[in-house]
Length: 296
Image (cartoon, rainbow, N blue to C red; front, side, top):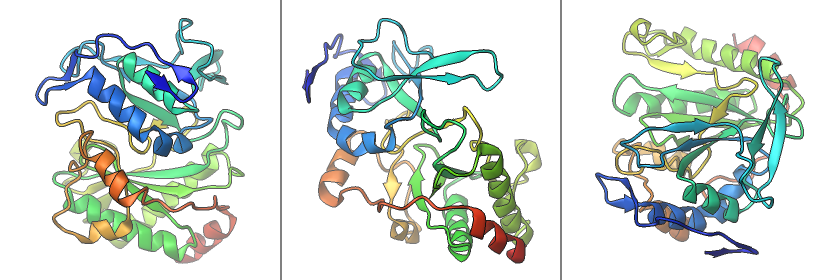
């Protein structure tokens, strides 16, 4: 396949990756070729971990951080320190659509991306709240709207996307001045405000047994070396759901389903509506932290 300036050799494109849906490796490759121009701006410079399924989603998963030596030399890589200080790992970086196509041909259904870029790995350019509902989608929808209102009060514009699962991710673009410890501490304080306001609805309890039907406000992705599913990535689940950027107005619809955007539907959605996320300037946390202290 010719992708931009690159030629990517494909193999076994008829192999079924999603048995319940009849979707093949070729379908996955075609999807990433189509959405690549919209997806790569969110990936450039970010170390990736690769979630691979050589024999389809019902077979063994391979979760791979290190970029294999056999990867072609035109695929960008980044060497970053391990979180435990035991050396470095060389990760793949997706700077173009050809890289996404190549990874799909390597059975990578879901590349996971760092919240920081390789040139400043200790300083994230986004903060993520992972909203994990106990069941259904309504709790995540309500939580995202409440969280957005609080972030607006703090002077922090945010965007929202489905995860391809049952929850939502709320992203806050940052200016890369704060390190991960500072960002995670701030995220925890924001979550604590929501919990204090509605303790019967929200929780920071990591153990499911301790949540008692409440929405879990997961802030733990905001750490060095942690990853999140990026916009437009396919998830290895029945139906091939896609982590899809949303316009906030879409959450006004109580009939909205977290799994309604899939490998089959997202290209048409992009053709029709474009990318719903506006270009947001990364913000400093200095003033929002002061406002949060007054709010708390």
